[in-house]
Amino acid sequence: MDQGLQSTRLTKLILLALVLGIAVGFLIFEFLPLQAAGFASAAELLPTIFLRLIKMIIAPLVFATLVSGIARMGDLGTVGRVGVKALGWFLFASLISLSLGLLLVNLLKPGAAMHIALPDSTAHGEVTAAGLTLKDFIGHTFPVSIVDAMARNESLQIVVFSMFFGAAAAALGERTRALVDVIDAVAHLMLKVTSYVMLFAPLAVFGALAATVAKQGLGVIRVYGVFMGEFYLALLILWAVLIALGGLVIGRRVLHLIRGVRDPLLLAFSTASSEAAYPKTLEQLERFGCSNRIASFVLPIGYSFNLDGSMMYCTFASLFIAQAYGIHLSAGQQILMLAILMLTSKGMAGVPRASLVVIAATLPQFNIPEGGLLLLLGIDHFLDMGRSATNVVGNSIAVAVVSRWEGELP
Image (tube, one colour):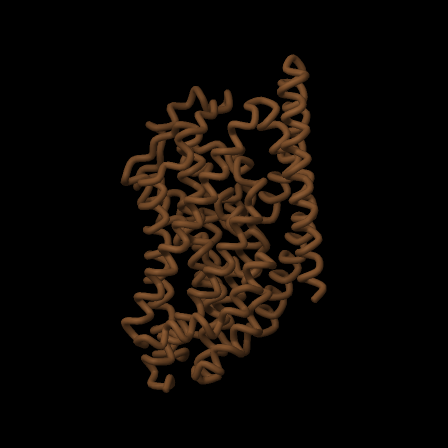
């Protein structure tokens, strides 16, 4: 309840900051045009601080959440066929979500109308030509030193090390239980730190929108409205695809499943947190007919490895930002981005607005200005509501599918 109340309060503050930011920016743009540049420069300090705080938590958060998640799954050899089937479905659903986001953002091109100038530090760097090659991707993937990777926030290298570390901890079993407990505590600690960082979000929203409107006027708001509409259209298409895929396995009962989880779905939507809906989702899945053995095993893993809505958003938002800056990414570069997001989006369950962290870690690897994240900060809560609800839908279908494969769904 406290989490829900805190989320509601933060939502109201973000909404207030959004309105105030637009209003103040418009007043500056209309009545003090000569001061607009100076005001925007000062206002941008607020989101700059917020971005630095977000980047501050990337390395420990990725390491702790991923290691604890893998270690608590147990060795794949002992997890057995249920774990293999669940992970197979998660990877398949992840690929569908990321690919669909990639396809739709290229078709809809929501950022193409913004025409934002590149920052000076990037404008002279041949952005299109300096994209990630396969050799660069390999270099970014495998760390020379985990300390160096953490110091430079090389999130993909941290993911690779964490996967090895977590698998080794799981293989050693009881001998590493105390260490895994400590790392799990660190994960919860970093989630708490993240919640503190998010308290600064209203100020960042105010600064980001006030600066943007002061420089560009209210015309930029129309682009945000178009982006939100197109993203929710993309989510509806993803829902249809996931429900259709689930229907291939469990038949028409998939529609009863969606109706059955409508309460946790609405809870996730209203709080912008799929974690808040976890207990109710588990309860409704058991009422639907999924065995407790399957549901209690697959659902927690899904919350770490099967965030369908969040993954679609990662590709959709990353390419939106590239389009806004006029940066062209080749098909090969976009596929590499998809591969990076496939890995970096794992193990981030329970992180408020985790997609911001994932996108912030991905943009620099393609020479896309990190400041582009601020373009979406003001409306991110509304986008997170849809992402969270989609995560609940995806995980519910995953549990039902694995239950049917195991012959434990009547």
